[in-house]
Length: 146
Figure (cartoon, rainbow, N blue to C red):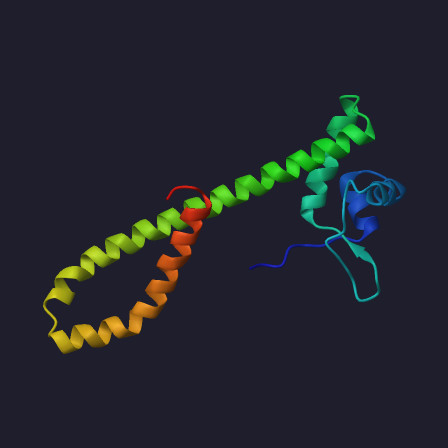
């Protein structure tokens, strides 16, 4: 996973074209949160904060109060989390389809193996496969699909 750029308050203020005081205020109000703190205890903000600042600015222009903005951002965070889960599930589905194709390609080769060769091969992959299948079953049970 690549490291995301992190910004100190002054850098974030310059990029977002707002004052450092506004960033402090939004942080104290819980509208934005630092990603983490530096070794010297500076608050460090991510690119995600820039998106939130743009959203806050748009909501302010639309005459929303700070309380309404906070509620809107909370809903926005939920939607973003749902989109992330949806994206991960789509990736998982694509991986499963790829695995299914690979298994189908291997099937003729496996059928030609001697029984002891096949047994030795399956002993190596069964624990990992069983763990994967179990994880998928748990996911499906939690989602009410089973």
